[in-house]
Image (cartoon, rainbow, N blue to C red; front, side, top):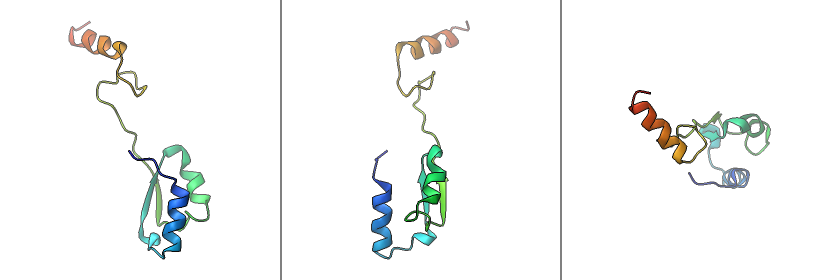
Amino acid sequence: MQIIDIKRFANTLVSQNTHIALATLYVPEASVGEYKTTASLSSFANIVALEPEYLVGDVNGNGEIEIGDVTTILTIMAGN
């Protein structure tokens, strides 16, 4: 996923008279409220949370595949 300065990007869209009133802006779940109350962003038709991304094999959900993840998968596969 590419990270951009969304506030700067939104200001650019507004200044270019882009029809953001018809657009949906996807943002990190924890930031939805902040984005909805930011003047340059509140013009979006919808501001909704991004679905979390999952890394296949990341059993413990820390964003990395480590030996502990592999061990857990092997243990499950072995029926233990």
